[in-house]
Length: 206
Image 1: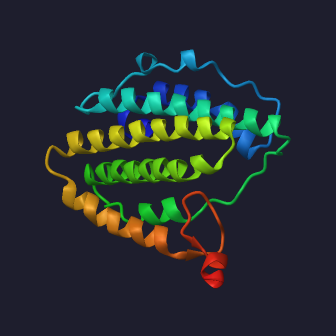
Image 2 (image 1 turned 135 degrees about the vertical axis):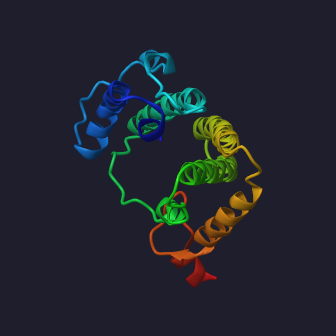
C-alpha cells in the first residue's frame, strides 16, 4: 500500500531494498542473507507523493508496522533454530485472498477496503495468539503475548487510517467485510493455516 499509494519511485526502490533480504530468504531459499538493521527503516527517508492528504500518516504507520513484522520474522527464525525446527515454505491459505475479493474497484474505496481487511487480519491474529498462548511453554507464551500486543496496535492503525481517508463513518463497510470474514473463518478447510477455517479433520471427529 505504501508503494502503490503514498511514495515516489525512488522511495519505492528504497522499500524494495528493505524487503529484498527477506524475499531472498523466503522465495529464493538463500539462507545466508544478512538482514538489515531496523534503524535504517525510517519514514523520514521516504518521499511522500504530492496530492495525497493522508500520505504521511499512512507512511508513518505502515513503516512502523513493516519494521515490527520484519523483526517478528527474525525472532521466529531464532526460536526455530534454537529448537532445531527446519524452515520450510508453506502454501498460502485462502483467508486473505478471500477477503481481497470484497475490495471495491475504484479509489479511494479500494484503499479503504484494503485497510479494513488489514485490520481484520491483524485483529484475528491477535485473537488467535491470545487463545494459543496459555497452552505454550514459558518462552513461547511470552513471545505470543508480545505478538498479540503488536497485532492489537496494528489493527487499530489500519482502522484509524481507513476512517481518516474515508472522512465519514465506515461502520457499515466494516460490517459487510466482517460478514465475509466470518464465512471464511468458519468454513471447513483441508489445509490448516493460522488464519484458516475449521479443519476438516476436526469436523469429522465431531
